[in-house]
Length: 195
Ligand SMILES: O=C(O)CCC(=O)C(=O)O
Image (cartoon, rainbow, N blue to C red; front, side, top):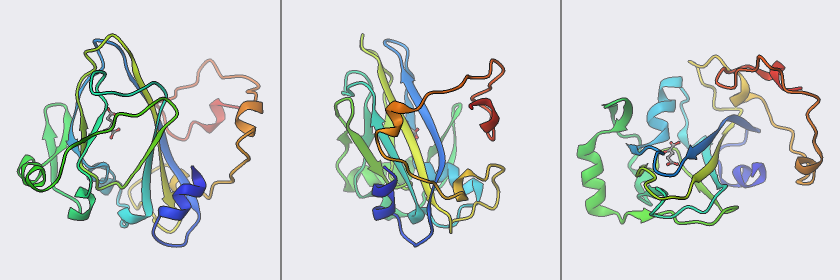
């Protein structure tokens, strides 16, 4: 994933890991996401160069229309950043621009199998429906950034700390000494929790 990011990202800095999140859309309950661009959020962290950022979504379960797979507008990243504002409890893209984009671009349902990955630009417009099926939809989304793209309004330093890739086999061999009972996985800079 790091090598793929390195090929696709603009610029020359080292590839760094901004954050990862595990998306768990449980059967009948997993919620919908409004149309948005990820850079609609990350712009607020004051990253200046969206072309130096990329998201990689790995499907952990099969993703289909029925279980609320991602929907994207391919090519919409070329529109640049669209204005974002509150849409209920979420931050969403201006619907005026989404409607115009829908006139020009095809909406694609990202129906993929477990193990497949989707690599996408932070200005790609995307959304998803709730999971109303009886199957879960889980995915892991990791975001990579070049060390040269400094977020001027971000507490965590991970997005500019060069990664040291290990061979794929390392993933299966790695064993945690322990996971701290007090670990708060929602808190950033919690590296000490996992040893
Ligand atoms: O995977 C999904 O259903 C939506 C996730 C998403 O849009 C995001 O994390 O930005």
